[in-house]
Image (cartoon, rainbow, N blue to C red; front, side):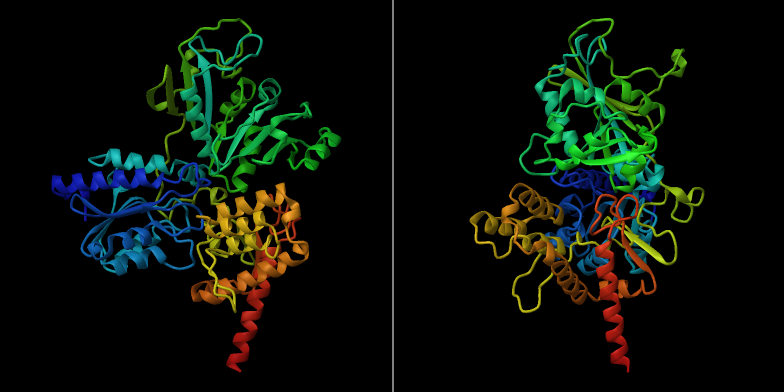
Length: 566
């Protein structure tokens, strides 16, 4: 079916409902870490009968929730998906839900940009006899606004899949005469309270916030979202020399994690002091914005916010790793020949060399003007067959590098179903309790058996957490703040806890069991660059205990199968 051949009324419904799907898909912003944003709207003509969005990594897919809401009204209706389903459950959960619901047609906004998902769900739905229209094919016509909305809500995913780096936004606030601070360095406050609230919201949509040494020394920022609960982005400090004060807000990691990225060998004693306080230190042979973005890509980040001064923003812009700029312009003048500006020296001598923004928007926020635009257009994906043909280096992390090694990390990786952050509920043998995920169970067991009201409340909060990510946040924070509440034998027991949870997971879901057995002969590596116990770590020297447990489980299942055959 072609959109351009539709009656105007049908086309209008399609555009209207797809805009709603794109709006819904952004519903978890600030609550969970950035992830592929998907939503499903089920409608009969103009009437919506079911709608839902993916709350976070490892939560129930939007299609199942929308179908449940619509009930029998989904039969003969149209399902609108802003993003092609990219199943991370080890089966075709979303596709099965749509098929069983009896929807007569599916409209997809964007084909999935990740290579291992791209086009597969669309083909599967068509193979089941369900007509599928793809808005992306007609994004420049009647459906331009709806298509654009689908692009913007998943811009981080599109940039990551296309350019091999996280989506990077440069944010700054300046006076009408282009200053980000007075000549003395004083900058509180350039913009209004309403503008600063928008910045907090933007931080909540980011995996990480990056600043340089100058900003840290001058402002001593906290770089938090100023919200209770919800997603807390990683704070990243870039400093080659580590010429930084020992007392800073960023060294307090009780509420948010901090990573210091520096040149190899810089101030070793200072590094040890930071590590002792819980700050993570990552060394580079040569610290550059591009090297940092490559690392953030390996870490699985989708979106990064740069809140740095001109000395760092200039090389970041010159390196071509900034994709969008958001600038708050305050109606005030400060003057000063030496007052700092948002962007340092770029080496440009003619106005024709200036960097021009695309798709520029203007919005008044209180007394300030918010100007935003893209330095690189939001990518439009190639067909699945050719998307990575020219440059295999941009294939998404998680696609294994050889036939004998399989890497997994995020739930949207090709083997993402192996992580403990997937939406597979488990029930342990002999227990009537059901846990929403392996991670929910694992985090709760840290405090199991501890006769303390706070520990018991933590277990209940973890049990009720909306997502595995939130369960991990609750468990990790309490264990860090109150180590006395962690069960005494935890260090000796956590491997057993994880193993029994994995056994329960792979015993309960035949499709996961089959997926695990399909890797026979391969080494499984949890490729988290920051976890040196469960993962392989940045340099590959981690213990990879999660991968080892999965291989042990695989061997046990294979042995059982052989005994049954004999």
